[in-house]
Length: 216
Image (cartoon, rainbow, N blue to C red; front, side):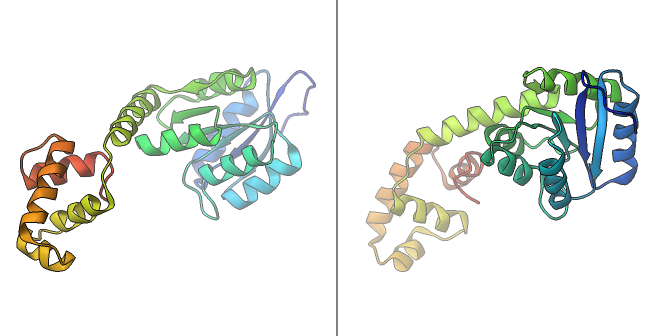
């Protein structure tokens, strides 16, 4: 590991895959202007070491044992840490991208980017910029659109309960028995539910509700 220069950006890397972590570490160590100050293979060790070392940038895998990258980012943000976190992950799930950015991460890159791209991104994050890879940009945009759609759909507690029964495959008469309502009342609620979801049948209602995150 190089001697740290005052002008260099200090970097910490956490990833539970040793071969990948070492590859990123070597790239950082060989990159001008970056100094690798530590590594960890799990989230708990990473958080402890980041607190101790206060690196300029922490490059974190999203999924790690102990605690994941999201939990580390949230902890650093809550503590007012000066370390800027960048997620580097094989997973590019839109909700995960949204959540880590909301938690305070300064960047999100897919692991399929080159080592040179990682180093460039680290330098950008250190300058105060926010960096998204191509996959992260698309995933974040999709997550924002979907959450906006969800916020526009307001179901009552009774409609939500009926939706859950519909997703389970129960008929209107059976739902009426389960909820101690008349079949006519259940059908009225179903009509309102379909209208809110912009559908005309049960299968479409379930499909749209799942897409909007209204059903787990």
